[in-house]
Image (cartoon, rainbow, N blue to C red; front, side, top):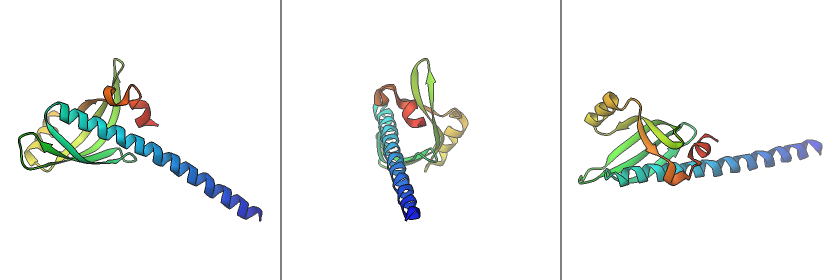
Length: 133
């Protein structure tokens, strides 16, 4: 009887922990999606769609419908991190790959430090905290 009670207690605790992780993962995914969409849209690069975030591996993928073009651009971000510079929070997108060879070469040659996406508007000052929890 005691073994059953312990097993039930362990199951309930692990379920609660998984639910908490799932909620945090969902919040992180929404923050990343909002930041990336806002960044590419406001700069006139195009519309971001189909964002997929893996917060465990810290990578993301999305489709960009480039402004003035008919063919979508598939974008894969191999890693991301947060950075705070003079109290401003940024999402740094690194290891950028697309379905355009020439664009991959430009990223490899000129974007070693990554793409710096401001988090301020979408995170209201809590971006680094939320993404690093």
